[in-house]
Amino acid sequence: MHNADLQIRLADVGRQIALDFSELGCTVFALCPEQQTSHADGAYEHASKVSSLIQQWHQRIKRSGRSPWGLVAPIVLDVSSETQRRHAFETVNAYCVTRNLHLVAVIVLPSVYTSLKRLVGGQEDAPSWAETVRQCLVVPISVVQDYSDMLAAASGRVVLLLASGDPLGMHSTQLGLLESAAQFLRQQLGTLGIRVSTVSAGPFAPASKLSAHTGGDTM
Image (spheres, rainbow, N blue to C red):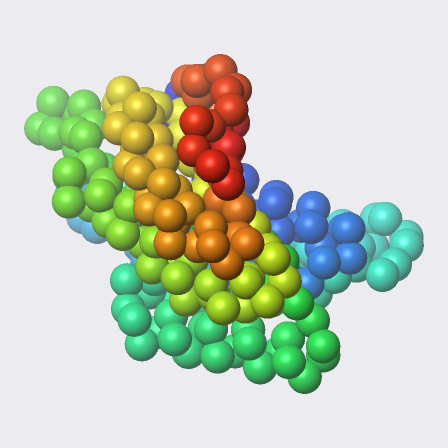
């Protein structure tokens, strides 16, 4: 399997999670990175694939022949923008309030391939350190903090998920940052009854283990 094929398959993890929870009858708000395209220099960037998500959702409902499925509501935004995240939160909160719903979980799947660049020889360089820190540490903390009050009201759970094929040996670095984010959130949210877990998926993921920290686990 080529690295590009592996990256595409792992990029679909978030979409699969949304569809699976919808099938269980849950309402799913999918925060999708705003649409991006590849640059002329070969930089690899994720696209939101919102239309594909909705299409697969309808197809799976039709094939299942049963109901009810939960709503899948994509929200396209720049997760680095505090203003756009605030608007997304207001949308989620308003929907839940008007329908008497509770937010029981926030699952964060960092985009870890957004800054891959190709060298002159055709080899892929590692993501910049600043971008890796932003995606695996800053963004997860920011997103979870936006919804902490809603999660606390339902004694909800946070899952920080790293799905990486480790094409450049970066999986351990990314996972370390994500676990640092989890530990920070445990300290901040543990008193609110919110559990925080980290999950590592992919061919280079470490073996499952229980976290040594109170109020969370690592898988």
